[in-house]
Amino acid sequence: MSMSDQIVFPDQPKVTSVVDFTPEELELVDREPVPFQTHFQGTMEMYSNLETVAEYLDRHEGWFVRCASPMKAESFGKDGYTLTIGNYGAFGYQVEPKMSVILEPPQDNSYLMYSVPNPEVNHLGYEVNYHAKMNLEQISSSEAAPGLNKVFKKEGITEIPSLITRVNWKLDLRVKVRFPNFILRLPMSLIAKTGDRLLAQIVRQVSHRLNFKVQKDFHTRLNLPIPPKSARICQNLVPGCEE
Picture 1 (cartoon, rainbow, N blue to C red):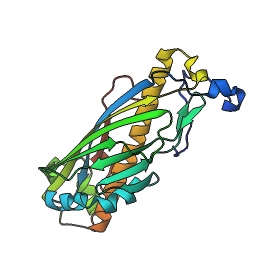
Picture 2 (tube, rainbow, N blue to C red):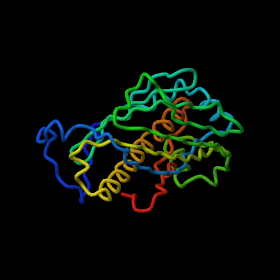
Picture 3 (cartoon, rainbow, N blue to C red):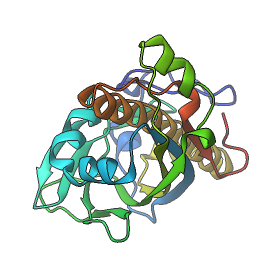
Picture 4 (cartoon, rainbow, N blue to C red):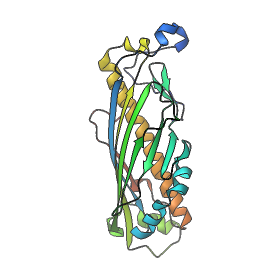
């Protein structure tokens, strides 16, 4: 899925093009925005001890920008970034969401990231409320997901670390969107269902890519084998939005 996809679901009415509508129909309605939400949790494994992983994550000014690509990430204050998520849409209507986030310094190997207002970003038609928590857990390599021994053997490395680090994460994302008139002709139940599913697809796509890139960046820099797919888990906590 590219960063400019129009996501279409089987039960979504087809809209040929926004040029088929009048200016009045394309105008954003001045009414209470429609809320959507999604909640995910997951893990990723890092084949090194907790101290080494924490040192890497603490230097987020390096890995965050590198691993966020193809999202555009720009520095925002001391511990913040402004992210351009991509261009997404449904029902023939597209939005290019942006959000500014702060990554708090860790406390007891726990990290908080949350969205904050940014007057320099034009949030025309939408509002974003993002909150994520990540914590580090040192585990025995025998507790790792299947595939650890295989990737070390494939790289010709006989010395397998006795301790590795599991990164546990959880995120909550709530978005409010102001729609043009032509969207609001549709049943609100359909708009809500499609919006929640679209939001879940965006989070799943971004999370899978970011987790893999962080793992690849960390392990490549330490000359360690890159963990297999089984060492990354991304689970949707909202029933009915799995696909």
